[in-house]
Length: 429
Ligand SMILES: Cc1cc2nc3c(=O)[nH]c(=O)nc-3n(C[C@H](O)[C@H](O)[C@H](O)COP(=O)(O)OP(=O)(O)OC[C@H]3O[C@@H](n4cnc5c(N)ncnc54)[C@H](O)[C@@H]3O)c2cc1C
Image (tube, rainbow, N blue to C red):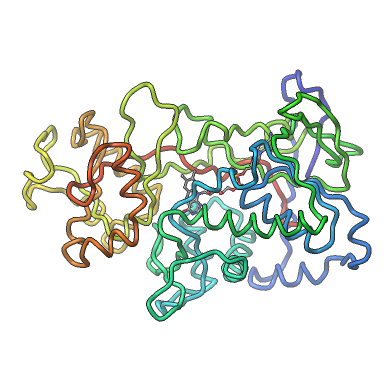
């Protein structure tokens, strides 16, 4: 972690002009990571327990890091403010996780996942890191399966795939509409194993209040025990922050109120660089707001766009219920505007398109602030049971919130702040 200033928590942050060095290795992107790993110094197994690592966060990032480093033999302390690692917000993830296994033999490859991700990110991501993500994606699926994550399988037993937006292949591994919950249970099991083995000490209901910086390096944290209020310093050789995103800088987002971004803000106040805060994803398929009393919005997983068709009435101001609007008076705007991706156009493109339709007076629902996501064609083609098997929990969630049965009438959806790609600046290694 790069540090440029030292200050107390009450001071306003100091902004320092600096040239950032991402330390991206030279040479072809395909071999960078293998070469970098080989060139790194190793720490032999009997020396690892001499190093203490503090990990803040027990979600998919922090929890998996703690379990892995604990298994390697490091002396790990893991901190989270929830009462159990299983309550990290990762539990809310729905639709699935991408990997370039090419099980469908539909032309996928590590390079294509890399390409789609760079393109889907509006060419703003650091390509070297995106390639590395694509490269390790297959190993992540293997690790999750080894941890017991019950991904959906086809009849013959192979792992099933569906598509996410911005892709023309099926590479999303999923567990119904509750993939995050299942992934987190897998990571938690691996973490619990290390806690039992004594390599990880877990501190729940413990909030990181500040970062301790010694000689320009993060060497500890100040924590508050949320039960007793006691404040203590904790020192280590290395501090890892896996503390989630900052979508809640928006008034309403798909994140629970607990996702408050405090840890990264506190690290930033101690001098860690904060980059690209505007790199924020507005997800196209959330339940539209219903009034002023809400504290958050609810995501309807992107995977629904595999089988749902998005449309609005062609005529602005049309207030007829969906089933009274004939086919030739419906505007399937994504299918018309982006025929090669159709309803699976990338998230930013789909979100902007939905906003344009609502702004033009074609919005649907009581507040005219949504667009339809319609499953009628898929139900006719595949039968209701198939749709229920794929997305049953999402349809139930939708009905609990809106009182509408999406097997009978189209869902109403609208974009909402969801995921943040900016945050604490990191270099390649
Ligand atoms: C509704 C929803 C659906 C999603 N669906 C998908 C999907 O289908 N596929 C996909 O790839 N991604 C999806 N995402 C995104 C994905 O869930 C997140 O990017 C990912 O789970 C974040 O994991 P994390 O470990 O970084 O953070 P989190 O799971 O949020 O964990 C943060 C951890 O940090 C701790 N923490 C934070 N601040 C402090 C502090 N000050 N002191 C102590 N501890 C602290 C918390 O206690 C927690 O343990 C979805 C997100 C949402 C909201």
